[in-house]
Amino acid sequence: MSIAPTQARPATATISGAHLFVRCLRELGVDTVFGYPGGAIMPIYDALPNSGISHILTRHEQGAALAADGYARVSSRVGVCMATSGPGATNLVTGLANSFLDSVPVVAITGQVATPLMGTDAFQEVDVFGITLPIVKHSYIIRSTEDIPRVLAEAFRIASEGRPGPVLVDIPKDITVRQIPDTIELPRYAAEPTRPAPGVDLAAAAMAGALRPLFYIGGGVEIARAEHAVRSLVDKTGFPFVSTLKALGSVPTDHPKFMGMLGMHGKKAANLAIQESDLLIVCGARFDDRATGKLEEFAPHARVIHMDGDLAEIGKLRRADIALPGDLKANVDALAGHFGSAEPTSIRPWLERCRELCRKHAWDYNAPGEKIYAPRLLKDMSERAGDRLIVSCDVGQHQMWVAQHCRFRHPRTHLTSGGLGTMGYGLPAGIGAKLASPDDLVVVVSGDGSIMMNIQELATLKRYDIDVRIVLLDNSALGMVRQWQELFFAGNYSEIDLSDNPDFAALARVFGLNARTIERRDEVDDALDWLIHTRGPSLLHVRIDPQANVWPLVPPGANNAAMMQGETR
Image 1 (cartoon, one colour):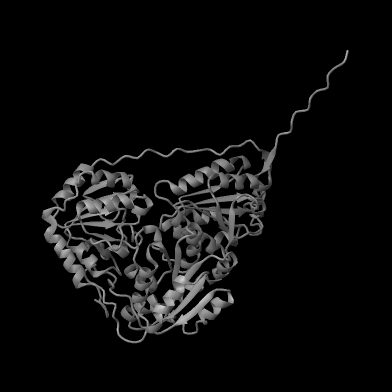
Image 2 (cartoon, rainbow, N blue to C red):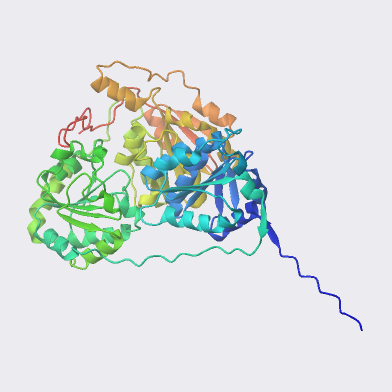
């Protein structure tokens, strides 16, 4: 009697944690990652080639985090950055704080020392989980290789749902090298249904009865993808509107009912209209101190309708007479259903008053002298570039000039560090923006102080031939600090002198960029043509008056009607 041989079981395929991690990223739709390799993250870098994910090697981890931020803002997807343990992880912190304060969806991946070494002060071990707790929506330390799909799916969902923000995923090295059966699937999450909040009828009645209504539009409009709904509501009601820094373009800035940006460096017409209004319809704004000035004197005659996706913002700083929490787009759409297309006759005197304010306080671009006038240059640049322009701005005087004088038709064409005010933001964010929208013209507007914070990313531009144009406004000083020292510290100019700056055009050429310098007004037209039409990463170095200030300015502790005017109207 013969016995048939036992058939061998087929071996179960296995996969390393690192390869599983990268495969999950790809299944979550990630096509671009910004990062910098190192020891603890090396297994994941080993799994990246041929994964379908493009990795952009920035020259500093902060550059990676800020590039992911810019990518997320323009693409409306989650941005991804990656760094190793220790200094690699801590170098991401400023970028994560920037995304947290501006509500930008980013997932930051950090390598960590192996699990048995955690807590032993091992080489390049830091508690990045603890360090980042106050500046992320959520943090993970992956303790098991099998948890990788679940953690990543949750991280991307948390980063993008509700009020977006950064999520940290810290992964020990032993978790990435361990082999497990290749049978784990990525969990999927369904989106929650949205509906308008109770109180829409009450809000509509208040709007219909107001004599001096004003929309106050904030960055939550873009977060909720509600810009088209808000534009429709503005047009249906005929109400004028103002915008915060981060909301510029939610309704096009050349709209006839736009009063301007409000706040510390807002337009005088916008700030005065706020103070005279009797009803504020607040769409995704949070009554930030830079927008309101002295809060207890902000819009003193106005009732408030407050719509925001984050319930915590409603009533936090200003009591809402009518609160509409929840999905902003659903609430705006529901409100729009109460209005036709006819402009109410009751607000015609108010509309004429708003038009009068805009006429009286219109900007005069005909500054005297031979020197380059930055507001005029930026206005001309944005008009010449047209609707395909994306501006990625650094922080300082130039940031306010961009907000005041550039034309924006969509909020995702104006990238700026609003909440944190991160110098060095513009260049890496511009890199992320261009990779997210390669057919658009991306211009970084920076200053001679800010550009030096992440100037190493010029090498990233050159390596990948990323067609970003840079306008560098050089006043040989930390201009905003100098202005405040002039006005509020009796002209005691402490540590603001940058007169020993390098030749920025020459420096850009060393990095392999096109570059030129201008310093006279009669050079501007040709230089802007060169900037817009020259193919490839380019830098236009613009020398401006070191004494030029940003006007108007609401001084600290004052209400928004108490604006200092300087040499402008």
